[in-house]
Length: 448
Image: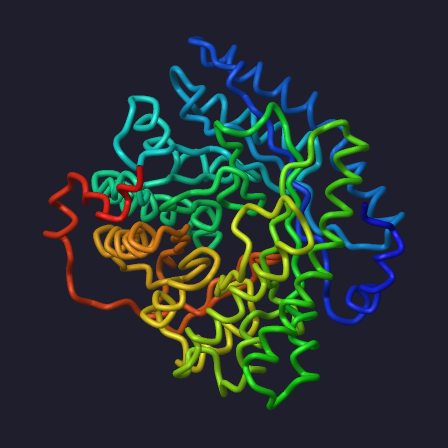
């Protein structure tokens, strides 16, 4: 049993090292809201979300005040909309955005489709609506799963997503492509992920569940300062012990929220999720290990150590670790990554290499506005292949900065931060993407 007194061990982390609970995310199953009439379906969705989540924000605020732990975001994830939309999905999208606003959450995720092996008519309708939906809604996030280790990669979906991302960027060009910051393309998507933009309530989830995402890059960085120059065995052990303490706090918050809301506790996601604030950077952890700049030779090895040690420490602290759990490397949300990209130490190719060992993938990366849809699809295909072959979750959240070139900057504000526009390989891949079809699953997927 977790005692509230354990929080005392982490108070200095909160006060001096930017430790926080990044999100309490309430997952809600909407399968019983499906209806052939889109407007009726939308009303059912709005009513169920508002009924289930009515006390979410208040509970989070109460826990913040009573425990003294910052809980930065309160969020909702729902069943992938393509599974409940029998007709036009746009009314459902608007109902979800309205419900998120009414409940006071900052984001709601689940405008999603699972297309790793093929597409239903509902999937295709949802994909076609994404650019408009992400333009007319404020808090709704979208995700599409285009590949998995068991199914391979749906290259038709990959091709479509390149075009959709370009169109979304054009629709929201006045906000530096903000719509694309709410859209992520996955391989091996996780059904209990509490982090946006990829959160959705998977079909194996209960009627509702409380999932908590913790964070603490600053805490890990400070812990490593005390073992500067020590061997990597000591580094790994230090990160494990720190991750254990961070996860214990997340477990306490998750169980308290679960009890007060009368909703089952799902998982703690112990990912190190950075922010643009100084002292809250994953890149600075890697540099504390001895790198002059993130992106230098050795960066991938350092990130692999960090990701593994975080997982090992976390699983000792909670029986229900899930989600993505590891280290995020979103460029726009990490001041160290931003500065490394600005000085040229961190390139798109190096970021791709790092995604082989990090929590997710190419995240919050701004590219020149003239980047073609086919090139975007090629980047998605490369990242999906890494996930498929390595049996891990990978993702692409990329923002074509319309009207801007490499070296310019896009600004989103808040947790989404800002990012330098980084160059992309200029050689074409149109003929490759035009092939379509499906890249077969790897041989090691045949495990039965």
